[in-house]
Length: 250
Image (cartoon, rainbow, N blue to C red; front, side):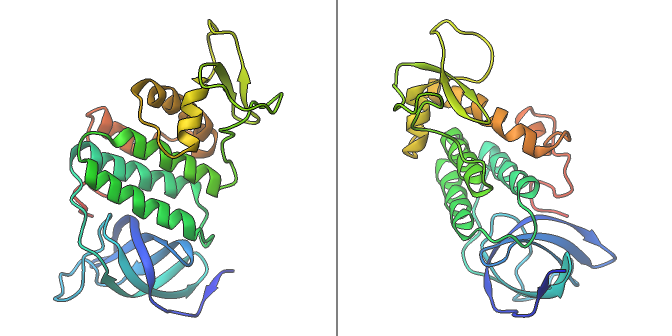
């Protein structure tokens, strides 16, 4: 049983929240020191002066304690101004939150991934409704690496030779890119230049991003379970179906 007895302030983001009893919330946090944690935020649905609302995309400083899967939130303070995500950038932020909820176990710290997430949110805020694809592809790759499923982005899986930018590969999730004929069909097909751009942290070309989206979706799929991601309904214009509304409402 996990026990947390050192309630020092630490950076955190809200990943998900839902009402609990009359005035409280059940909140899933991504913390820098303790990873993903679940806490009860008592009386959090009451607006109190000087107490920030527990909403996504706001970096907080939090204190919590408890044992087992569910702790108690002791304190929360805003440590930065709220990000003003809109449209596709907002939907993308909720997509990142869903990925973290599905992929991360509770109480498994990933300080570097926390920083990657904060960087991704800032990038979504900067690009607005356009240009979210490079941000999403890079974070998906970082998340897979943090969870032990990092992509092979520089070498061919069978020969170990460096990837050729103009060569077509079929990406095998268990092993990596394998050279195929230029007219190959089926599977996760991707050119070397797309994988190399992702390795460098700079995927930009539209064709590269299209191929990388297919590869990353294929690699992520076995780890996300069979339940559809609610955030993808937003991209399709079907409206939000999760427990937390896009505007942060419970």
